[in-house]
Length: 262
Image (cartoon, rainbow, N blue to C red; front, side):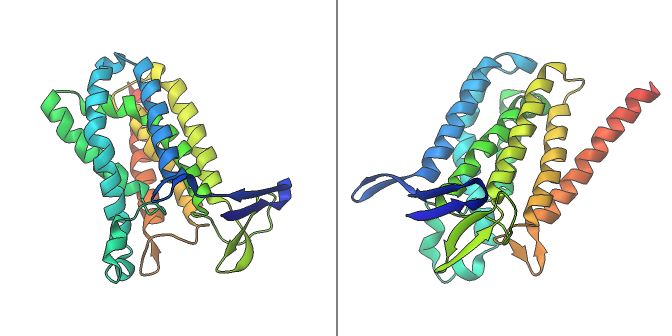
């Protein structure tokens, strides 16, 4: 049981990471929230059946491969930057009940899967990426609440209004609820992309906007986190976010300037 407080908001909660306990079988909130997010995104995808000439049946077929591969890649990415721990406790590699999924690993795995899928099904890559981009942001928005129930993915100590009080290593500290920051920001990205999807000016536009906006959001939020994946003194996700934001921001700017010159 995790005691979590938001003293600035007058909220005091006792949060159990386990949703249902059948003695030897436990269902964690973390898994339930991820599955719920996937289900909601698929239902919304169904409403977009036919958009950009993408059939929902293809999305369902893609999901059968995409979801397990993305989760595996998200785990591999996380483990690779925590090798000191996992070489000592190799069986813990398979224990994802306490978190340990890196979103960029999942995105890399997803894109590689989509590329292969599009080749086989003869679907335009940028069309299907645009189709999925809003729902990726929504899935992240929902999925971040799994971190809340696990009491993880928080930031440095703070006295801000939204400060989150937790017990860590027996000590009570008040920290930035970075999971909440990212959840709200990705919700805004979802709303932006969802309203923009009917006004797409060119193939790839929504995909470029997603990586540009999420890159900015993650680069800022990563600076507050205390559990960043590190390479020496470098925050891997922060550097990758900055690079992605620059690349896709440049593409968006190029497309805009090119339109002005026509």
